[in-house]
Length: 198
Image (cartoon, rainbow, N blue to C red; front, side, top):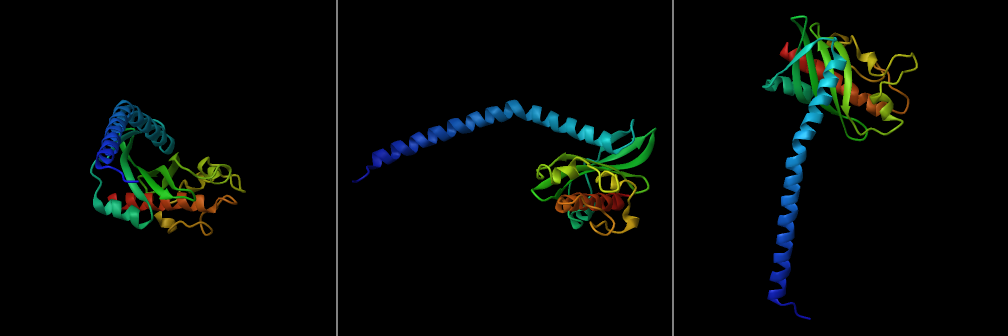
């Protein structure tokens, strides 16, 4: 059976029209939802900033992060997304670093507070896809055997402690070692970035 050129043109034209209509609809949906998604992301970031710094702190986003700061985070395995200067009671109080690092099931997006003495003040996980009941225990800051929350164990640690590593100076929740390593990578990246920016 021979297919005519007219039939091929008709099918191609129909598919082109369908593609254009679908693209238009997707564009409209994006236009309607983009602002809402951006607002939700901004609210999640604000909540995370407040969770890793002293209550009453203010934040100013560093809109032009120096390349050497980005490189320092990358060298430690993290991808720097945003960075904020933190001010408390009118005085510089350090930085808040929003970055991603690899976990067991994908990227872990977190905000990490680093005070003026280059010590960790807190970690807040913004987004992750870690396994429920395993890696999610890390993301939810569940307690280790000693009773300290797995994320809380980083508070007070600094680059002076050396590169943080699960099994040497960081404890993991049983069965969630890779997730703990992902957070540890993020902490090392945040400390490196804050160290470079001063």
